[in-house]
Structure formats: C-alpha cells, structure tokens
Image 1 (cartoon, one colour):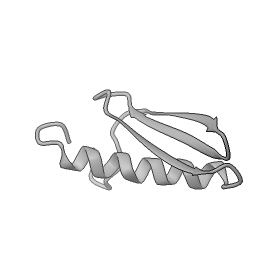
Image 2 (cartoon, helix red, strand yellow):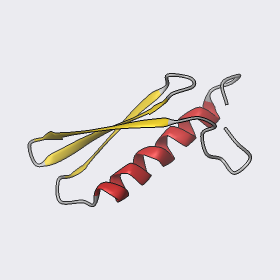
Image 3 (spheres, one colour):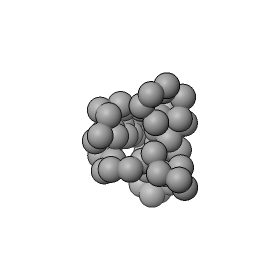
Length: 67
C-alpha cells in the first residue's frame, strides 16, 4: 500500500446482481487478494465500489508482509 493507505497497483471490481442485492468483488492486482461485499441493488455503484475498496485496504493492512 502507498503512504496514503491506497493499494499501490490496480484494483479490479466485479459487480454481479444476486436477486435484490449486488455482490461486489474487489481484487488487488498486485497480491491477488480479494474481498466481497453485498449491497442493495438500488445503491449507487460508486458507493459500493468505495465500500469494497475500504474493506480491501483493511484486509491488505492486516496481511503481514503483504502490505
């Protein structure tokens, strides 16, 4: 991660509707670590992306030797 807490490389996002929810997967391209969040289908895609990115950043910060 960089000094400001964001991942160094690219982050890939996948949005998949599941009934009345959206499953958002965020994948750090450098490490291959991925996280999943669920949100309502009517939520803004930018909000769901931000939520998934924050979860990914927390996960990367918790991985010894990977952050």
